[in-house]
Image 1 (cartoon, rainbow, N blue to C red):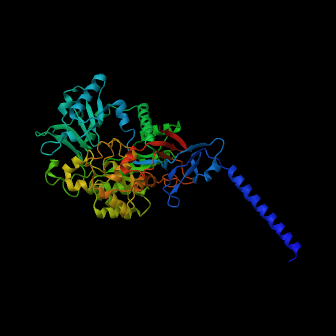
Image 2 (cartoon, rainbow, N blue to C red):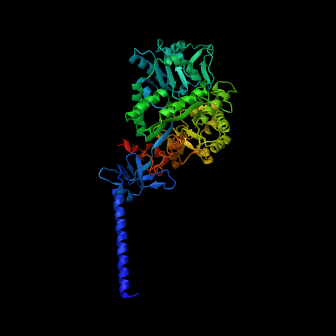
Image 3 (tube, one colour):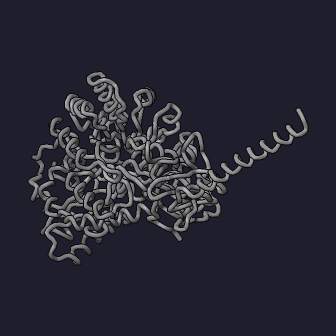
Length: 587
């Protein structure tokens, strides 16, 4: 090679390099001038819930969609003139919390329009609240309310028949009084309500229900489970108007957003309520995703249930409002002596030595309903407290599989206070989702009643989350609000980790229920985000922070994975973001 040739080649290579560099610069300039974000969160501790990119520093959002997840440097290319940029100063970023079993508007209906007993503690306070409500509402045709607890009515022999009608009669005797217990499974009424409903010592009790009786056989004043249906015509004297329901729901939604909640499964779905929610959606007033379930009681024909769900699914199937879930009750609740257990209740239940509770449905009718709904691709959500009810639900799912074939059904059993080890294995093998309420995992207000009804050892073994998670069961956390008055996900996460009370005044007392069944913070976080999205068939667009997914995000004041677990419940929600818009901003 001559000297001149070498120079020419060098010049050509230099020019080639300049051209390549120019192309790279042009591409970079083009990249920086392309998509601009409407919102950027940077300098944060981002937990994505995605295995291939579990953490990040920054997130960019354009309108409703996540367009970037990465580091603080690379996110700068998405900054435009109209971009809102928030420096998080190290705050934690998580997918928005989702509640996989709740009952909106919850207590807001009671707070606004009824007698609210939720925060009261004694029988005397309950009676005074009813008397005060009557004084303030002299023209009322009926008094309704919610929030009384069974605890104050435990007898010296350990039994618990609940409160008496005569105590209500003393303050209101001329109009009916109907008061729901805090768990929603029992109703306390006065004599006028019983009279108007035609309930007396000769009334036949519906299957799965109970009418508490006095020694002479007359009604005491408490009806449980299916027996409450006997009050339907009297209860109808109090009906929320459409505007009242909207007012209560919007109050609930505002509160839920402040807790970091961006999506729910509404267990109080009905065709009437869904039409109201649709109106809120049309008006742009929904600030959370609302999936819905419709409850069907024993006696409902399967064809009727299928048609109800399919018709509603066709009508309500948007990003904001969906339905494809049917709820069935397999049993009642432990404190009401109506949960179905494989072993009998203790003598303290006052039901003799061989009381196991009672199934809400006859097995043949239950299995037929489950199979009919499953055949049409409808998801089942089964209430089961006792291990007997859990077993019944799993048997029904197995029968449906045999009849209809296997599919990605994501059927769900909710509550699961007690479960056999072999049924944990079955749940995992069939991909049956466990919708559990971590708020109940410690020695809460119900524990003393559970201990009295089934014994200390069985009560301590309840809610074996660790055992279930390790077996491969998908746990999707939820609150069951308002039976659970406090539905803040951060409180639920703390309880799931500590199995102790989240409240500072109680944390140093011995309220731990079986610490061996605790989950980690990361697992609890997943249970309130990714796993609920999976439960609702929304894993493609919700439940994690990933490019292309909806920008439903919560920002927390501290990294709860690094804090003392007992401080998780004290963590502040800094921002709640839904569909790329800030719907709540904390102090």
